[in-house]
Length: 435
Image 1 (cartoon, rainbow, N blue to C red):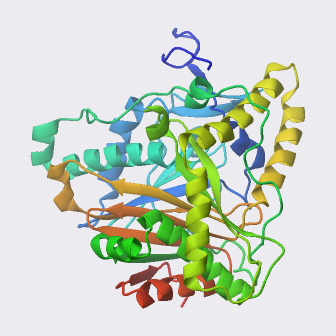
Image 2 (cartoon, rainbow, N blue to C red; image 1 turned 90 degrees about the vertical axis):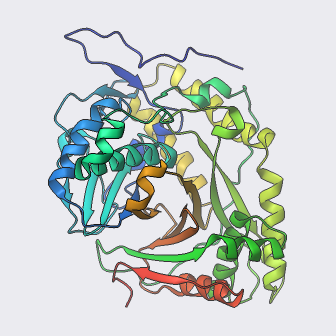
């Protein structure tokens, strides 16, 4: 196992040379494949119990951003690799939302920052270019931004906490992939092309979002009835919905695979705020007609449980890191590396039908809880995946959010109907694209 010191960003600090930092192992992919049609931007949002004051939110961002080296950077292009450099500019401008979400974050806009902050009525939204960090890093930043905003609006909170970051907020920036990988030549992930969801698309730039809210105690009861965890139940029900609505109970030579990002931090004792996740695939091979709901749930559960263990997860990212170490260790110009990365990405992306990720339960400091109603999150589209799902919970409520550029929400509708058929009460919201 390779180790490296857990230190501040690489590069020496002086008055003339800005700090710089390497991209983590996963982050190398995103600047290569990102663009207007595949933005690699995700959103995490918080719903408050009061209207958002845009000026106060800007003030809060101005205070918080300098404390987060991870977000206070711009991306630069070198001869052999991309790298981060301290930005040094004023914080990007907070704006009232007026366009569809998860648009491409162009490196030369937003004062070269790789995130944006928007608000609308009671909602504060953080959109992040995935090159910076994964969902856990985004939650870290949004929580502190929310705390600071609420302190400005409610001075009694500021009198108690001041403007300091919470003691449980990590600022660690190690590349945990490099610290934990073992040299490996064994490929652990699928590369065979999966079933692809197709259909009429929304108009250019339109982006459909549907939130479904359920109570966690009831959801836990239903999941346990099937002998599954909440996450397994939601993933399997999603796969079932694709099977019913797209294949209509027929067989298929191509498997339905849902990519499921797994947060590696608890497996490898990491608190990094950089990307540290790996994808497993919840697989259903429709090898017979008219499979029952229970059959699909059992197959998906077996598929997930065979993969989500420390040994297999280590195998997955060790293969990627080993290959990339060989590629980046050689004196290969960046444009040639990018060609290789695109080829590998295309193969791996088409090996999955969709993605469903679970951000987890967002916990706030008790004194801030009365001001916050809910959190939710969702993903932008990627190659071959025109529909994705994200799970996020707060207190006793869980949100399943579908993001899509497909014109008809057949799969989403089937998913929520199945939850209702299992006895769950579901509250639906959308951004108005689907009427």
